Image 1 (cartoon, rainbow, N blue to C red):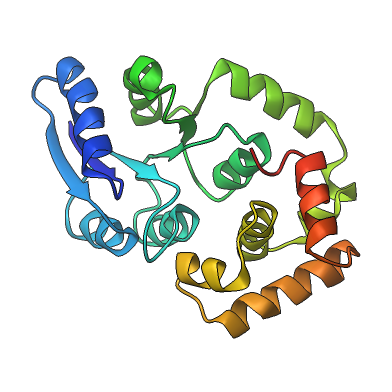
Image 2: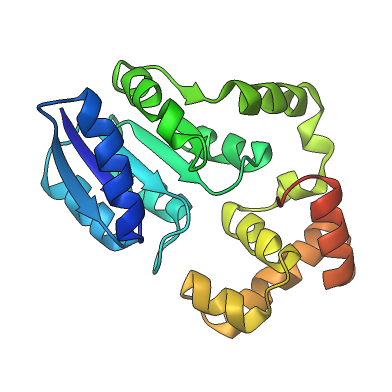
Length: 209
């Protein structure tokens, strides 16, 4: 078993390795602390599974997932998040993730999740699966945020979390002008008028934790 772990916090990487090494005794581990490093390692070496944090410096997990799926479409990718956002999980699974779980649940569920995605299955926690089922039962096309691109969706979430345009630009490694352009598109597509309305909408639709 060859397992690549991508997270910008060394303590988190070591914790995940410890949990997995206890079950997979002969496992070989690789580590990446940035999105680009994860992409490079996924391309250069063969892996059985990638455990990928959504929030990565330089490139976020969503962009990393897309890049890796272009070069290694069969590599199972298990996404890790700080929050159990069901609608964000849906987007990740749609673009190729094999699983989605929270860091909080990782110690208890990680081994089972890795086994499932390596065998070709998909994994979400029972609690998250229930939330996703309720969400998918709705007519999602009627929701304004479903018109947003993945990048616009990320910017909306960050605006709703209270971050300024400058802070968002730094976090996503974009220019302030580009982030402002995304914000304008979000407003046009959703019909909302300002950051206050965007934030209210995101909270109401459970787009942020």
